[in-house]
Picture 1 (cartoon, each protein chain N blue to C red):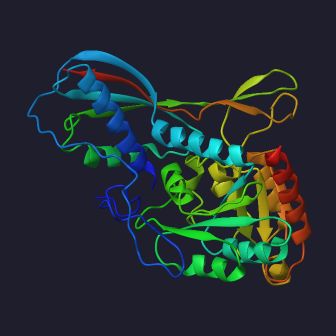
Picture 2: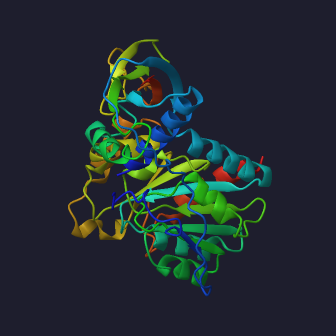
Length: 263
Length: 112
């Protein structure tokens, strides 16, 4: 029925895997309506007041995840961006640089493949890969399920790399402390205007691949101004995950947020 | 395309409440969608028309009430209708707090 969203997938479509393990599908986290058939005409019937949030089920599980994080003093971040902005490269670099300072664990979200989880495992962090099948975003239930199979040390940092998509992940609370939106300078500097919901939902904007600035037509200040119009409180870090410039700003932000989460 | 996920949530809530009320069918499902909620209403309606089949709402109409975005200026107290492109107070230039427009709610049902 819906090839993009994936909510009509068979029960084993969402998988949770670790590098080196076999596939083991688990229960589909969504409920579906049961079949009923009625022949009828429209008519003026009874009015029933409902007043219920559509995302209540996700939001309840997100609250449960939030309690899980708070109880362990774990800082949980939801990394969101278009595909190809450098989320995984930034995580690899962060793990290698901060491994001795703070424990890091990663949940990877992609429609298919174990590729990103293998890169994270090679960098030295525990990781679970969620493959969403046709799904376009991670939801709170997927995170709850992944946490049962992932070592996240108390006082550590959990990085959730969402499916590359600047639209849908904005709506789904996973229980994280903050969304971090990543944009690379090979994209358009008007992205915050084109995808305002995501930039409005984020607390930090990482501008990545700054080493390529001399070669591309990307105006950093115009990008920031566009993002601030949507979200005046948004903080920014400019860096190159591959070359290393600007990483101290990102690490400083992480340290401050981790200290706040541990209190 | 998260609209299908939202439609699954709408139908789940609608069927649950309709069944509790002993309904034989649902005629209309009225939802309130904020303009800042990140939902494309036409996609929502399109998904609903497919997903409703085989449910108590198989013949139901989806009525969408759009809720405008509202911002409150903590500096001067002005309240103004906003979209995401105007998150600054038109009166004093302060940063507006979003106080409305992110609703995603099933408001009511019409049932038989």
